[in-house]
Structure formats: structure tokens, C-alpha cells
Image (cartoon, rainbow, N blue to C red; front, top):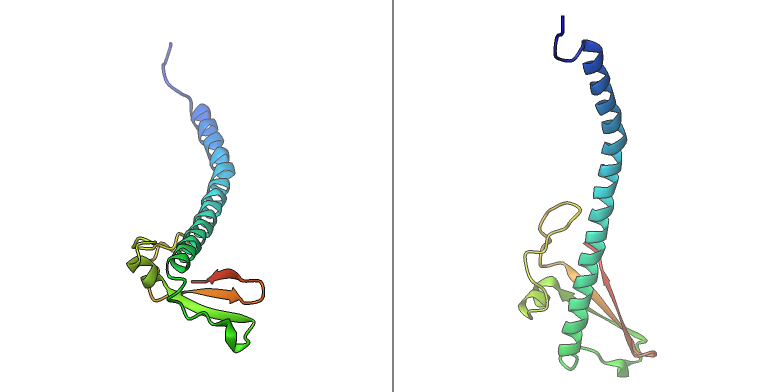
Length: 125
């Protein structure tokens, strides 16, 4: 008698092998997704800082930078809304970590060092 099909033992072995493969792959895939979200977040921050640099360059003479008062550093805050209105940043701005929209009232801190005549940029959201 020649029955075609799989025995119960063969089916159990296939399911067990698939289960083991799943146990190995799922944590690695989750870790990879989290790492990609972090990279996207850092890229977003870098893009916002780049947009801020362009904004500062375009509006250098309109910004309140006055080193004659004796301060070594001057801090200016630029909102994301200013960057969007200037065309240097597009909206909506989505946080890759949370998939939520970042509010346009968040600010980029621009610090001008009067001694070295250099700008530095900081953003946290």
C-alpha cells in the first residue's frame, strides 16, 4: 500500500525547524529595525541642522549677533516654523522613533562664538 502524504513525525519536524528559525530571526530583525530608526533620527537632526546653517547664512545680517557687548558667546533660537517658512525644511516633520509629527514650535539653538567666530548648532526634541 503506497499512501502519498506526510507522516505526523515529518510534519512535527518541519514545524519545529520553522519555530527554531523564527526564534533566531525575530530578535535580529527587531534589533535591525531599531538601529534603522536611530539612524533615521540622527539623519533628521542633521538635516534640520543643515537647514539651520542655510537659514543663518541667508539671514546673517538680520540676526541679533552683536559681539561688541563683551559676550564671548551669543545664543539665538530658530523655530522649525522659521525653517519651513524660509523653504529650507519641508513639513510634516515626522520623528522616526515615535512616528509622531514634530511640532514646528521646537527650536534650534544657534550659538555664535565671538572669539573664534564660529557657529555651533544644537537641537533636541
